[in-house]
Image (cartoon, rainbow, N blue to C red; front, side):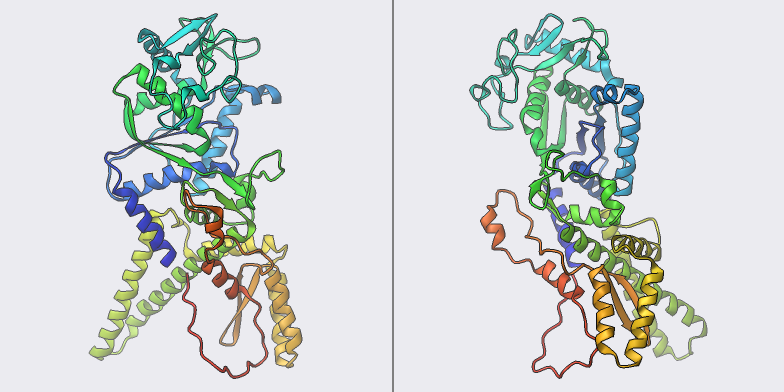
Length: 495
């Protein structure tokens, strides 16, 4: 509950900075459905929370489906392949409980809007055409660089902007590209071709949200040149163009290294959710400040998984307790005082359960499945991680029970230790033994997540109380009688 309340308080602080109700986000490359899709979380999280507050909110997430290089590499129909990947992306977002935006346009369906915006920019003398290409004139926009803080003279030829001998300025970027052999193209006043990447977002957002809206999301790497160019061309098309807040999310790192195919540490969302519940991945992503790097590691995701399992175990136990009480009222005694005590306890637990579910719903952590079903889903993935079957675990429990009965405590301890090493812990409840997933003890202790503009040294000095508590909870227990304690220690509260 403490962790959930921290996240809710952070969202409340965000609310204080919102003036209207409009948000835009571009899913720039539908062919990539890897873990980097976490860029949708800041926007979808804000969208979910402001809907909860009752705002009449419009959320647009566009798909850039113009670049067909991947389709030609695979020898497939470009439009069909793009549509397939868009659907796969949406399935991943549904699994992670990201709400569907108000609009999800594809760029190829908005070519007329793109061409009209380019024509308007040219009419305002902010662009020029050469041989079927149309380039934005950065010299016509003195405020170029206001978002990234870069100066125009810093954009030397060959650095990010590329070199093209016919450009008037090396920093200028394409609004329209003349058709090339083997590439898809559309007719335009400047000849057949296709739009540049930057103009797509400006045209689509203006069509659905007008030229002025409140929040624009995207990855940190899009600040320059993509979002910088968006500002320039949008203002060139409409002087009143304005975006109140830019939300740039941090990169995904794998064990403190940037995720990339070249480093061999690249994997998809589905590769993660095959072994860990989607709710565990969502909880992990929500625990990071949106501008901070997301440092994914096995230890971090296992701690997140343990936390969400604990939450749903609490839900399940509470629901079971309420169910027992409801059944008990049918045969309850006529003693008025006892009835009143039962009713008070029932109402208190009911309200607590309602509050917890409301928080989980706002955070996107409330599953449509029952708490029992969610717990079973977590267990199934734990078995898969440990390369075990439920029959294996039940057999180990039987062996341990027999060992304890024969006072073979070393054998009993070893069975428990072997299971914990595979991510399974045993819980003795009365005369019964139950099992549940746990954090494997060999996982490294993660560093505390970096905060925006915070030095690495400062992060290293921070305590990792949550991870230490979670590892302590997963530490192997002994079945031998414990020696008398010399001093009592306060219990660690659950996180």
